[in-house]
Length: 196
Image (cartoon, rainbow, N blue to C red):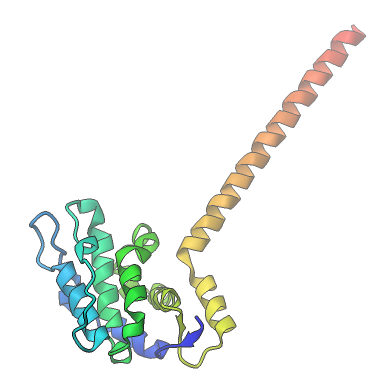
């Protein structure tokens, strides 16, 4: 988040105005209509500005498993999001964009259906902030601490981790209470038999 990026409001508007074609079914096992590698390739050409010597392998953007449906749809949505004019010609971001699209969206795609990133205001903002952070960018006009704090407040993955840690701690405390109760009952039973 060291560099200032595009305005948050502009990217939010872009997500709100997502065209229906972006949500078409991705090609999986010869079914579906939207070629994810083609969408990603178009984005990379847009970002690069001019044809370059280095062109990455687009195989990470294909799948033969229906389990990858949401992940592939997320790739298309984020490619659309990053196809904003602000990113045009910023070839220095290509490597990070490629990594974001190839694997960086997995934590969100496993937890949240892609449509929620369009329909839910908090999820829209989370997706934008998450993507910008993966690109080492922050929304225009924000200080680094502001951007980090807001992303942390919206972070679904972190919230789930905290919830799981809390549940695990509560379960550990419950087991400890039961063990203490069992030991006290054993000691009481032993003391009672000693008295008799």
